[in-house]
Amino acid sequence: MTTVTAELLTVPEVMTRLRLGRSTVYDLIRSRRLTSITVGRSRRIPADAVRDFIAHEIEEAA
Image (cartoon, rainbow, N blue to C red; front, side):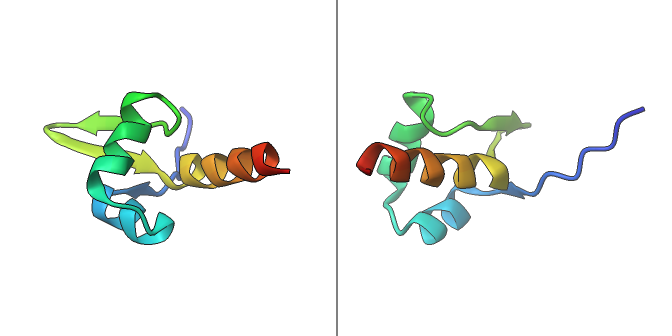
């Protein structure tokens, strides 16, 4: 049995962390630049995916 301790964020929480609008966050999800899962009818983004996205964007900018 594996234990998953990933923090799952809502779209509004990701919007706040990245200081982006709702449509931009959904565009990142749609383009698969930001990993997400669906729980019921809700979209959730692992906190690790947000950190990975930021790290990737920093690498690309360098």
